[in-house]
Length: 146
Image (cartoon, rainbow, N blue to C red):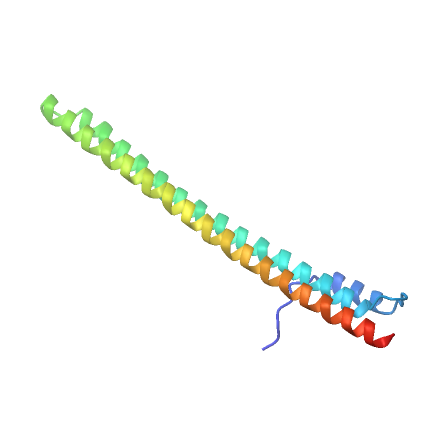
């Protein structure tokens, strides 16, 4: 299975043309592959962010639909012929349920965002560790060439 790079075709062409250049003390292949990995990391982070935003928006839509449905039921209840004490008790219970639902919703949204952030942070940490290892290997190779 081929690795998906998420690099636009015009950038691939640009990478190929830069590989031809020779700079003293610089390995263009390594520099370009590092740049490509950086772009892949940014694309992956952007994809996670987009998916998280979509998930949160779907959750918000469900939440607001539920709140408006409850509000509609409460308006209908306030115009009912039930005794005043019964209406008040129903409103109190509905308010408690709405508060509980809001707290749960906020926690759910926070959990989704926290998981997304953690995934992005882990990806960045992994990328930087790999880059540092690659830099150490390049330094050793450069020293051996001298």
